[in-house]
Amino acid sequence: MKKKNTVLIVIVAVLIVIAGILIGNNRYFNTLHSDATDFTVYDTASVTKLFFADKSGNQVLLQRTDNGWTINDQYPANQNLINEMLYTLNRMRIKMPVSIKKSDNIVTRMSSTNTKVEVYQILPRINLFNKIKLFYHETRSKVFYIGDVTQDNQGTYVLKEGGDKVFVAHLNGFRGAISSRFTANPLDWREHIIFSEPMGNIESVKLEITKDPENGYIIKENGRYQYSMCHLNGEPIAFDTLRVLNLMSSFNNVRFEAFLYDVEPERRDSIINSPFQERLTLTTKDGKSRSVTTFGMLPKADMFIYSEEDIAKFGDAMNDPDHKYALLSEGNEFVLIQDFAFGKLLKPAYYYSKDNHEEVPQIYYQELETVESR
Image (cartoon, rainbow, N blue to C red; front, top):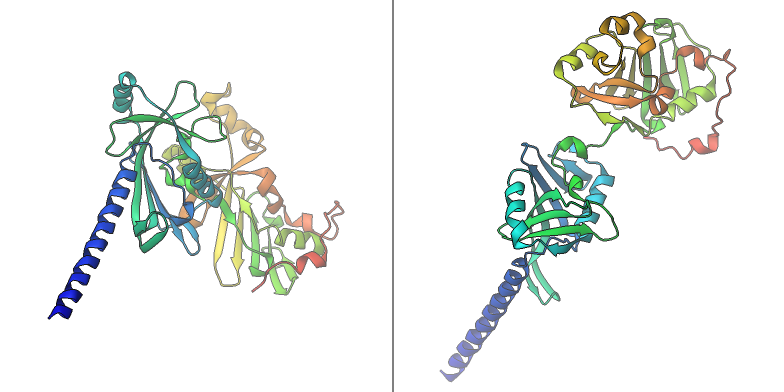
């Protein structure tokens, strides 16, 4: 009987100790999270999701996956921007609290112009003095609001969810405001990639030129770094091997400059329904194709001294020489491309002819061996 009582006392004592630890740990967390100045994420490696929403109706969910970060479970995110955001969350500090006199006005302003920020992390349910950590799970660890820029442009107003005090946040080592980094527009987080195919993955490349169809072409791979080239009517082209190799090795990182989501729908429809300048189609060895259709970038008449009739009269001579509009087959997206980055991919068939004696940058077969291939 005494033995059973002893066991019972030991069990009760153990339960009391565990309850005390849990209560103490809970108080520790409550104290930590009640601190209105806690906007910093110290362990960015534990961040799994970031959610932003603004008063204009924009929302974006950035999520960490095994293949990198994604946007709204749909598109790959720009890794450089993700890294910048994680760095911002890690280095963001409170500069000063806002005085009570100013705070009410700022809160009122933030109620109509703010970006809500939610941070999700993998954190332990039990954390004993930051030494013993048990039962990791995903949790929404921080929720706060990003407001306007301060008058000196050196800080940003922030307010924690449930808090009644406004603070000025800044980034250690950075002079300026950080509010623009917390954008809720999904397009601002998108990668600006058109093509990202290594040379060994490409099955064929096709170029169509509306005003010069004879100089369109198709290039096909016949073996490792072995290609054939012909006009669109099937007539073979005696091509310069180095020029073709340079072209085929140029598709590993081709980007556009910007999304044109702010172009009026009527103007967009007018552009994409007009005759295109070039259409470049790349087909990979797994049978997938992606094309880019380009259009001349004419100025808007009301921005210049020219009338609509003048612009129509001069035609292509009025086009921006450095930029073009482009329509991407994937997603039917309207973007802006630079001739500096994209022009080398749109050279006509005669450029690749053996009879063309323009100087060609050299490419060596030793370099080709480093190109990945399936």
